Image (cartoon, rainbow, N blue to C red; front, side, top):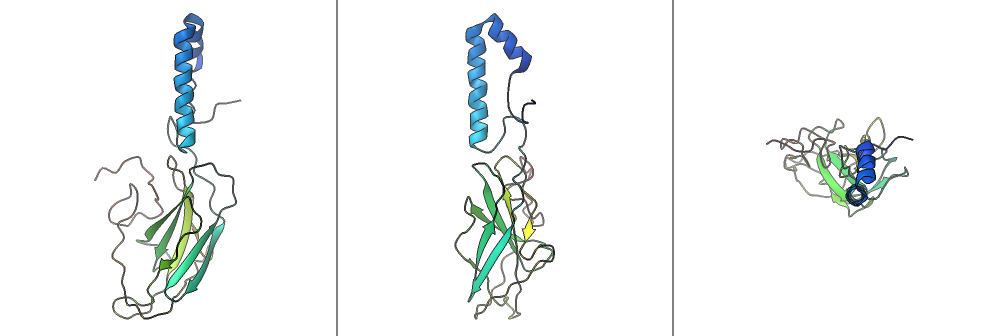
Length: 190
């Protein structure tokens, strides 16, 4: 059986150390066990990134007035530390979508979606969600409505154009990189 990616074992070198000096070898083995336990408990890896969670099954959305209440369905096997994100956009391509971090919850407080933009034009809203571990890339986003995203509308009198998205995690501050959650890279240079 092979060792899962990201698990530090010490390999043949550690086996030799244990044979040559049991005290030092055992200490190194304990340190490796601590590192692996920490990585597992934080949904990360001691060496590289872990596999992302499976994609979510879908979103349930109910609206009332100017609010949308979103619930994420995710029946796949996951480990502790899974976070959820929903992206809100006023276009079905999700260009410059606004990320909403749900944390570990698959259902959170309703999102305010103004029925009109600042100029008084009716707005349509599109939603999609995905899951991510702190030490993985995001899962593939799943739109409300599936392959053909379904628009939702709200009712009320508010005229509000959201300020441009600045993204999330290590994505660009332009908001152009959507579906990033915590990030797809370890760091952002600027």
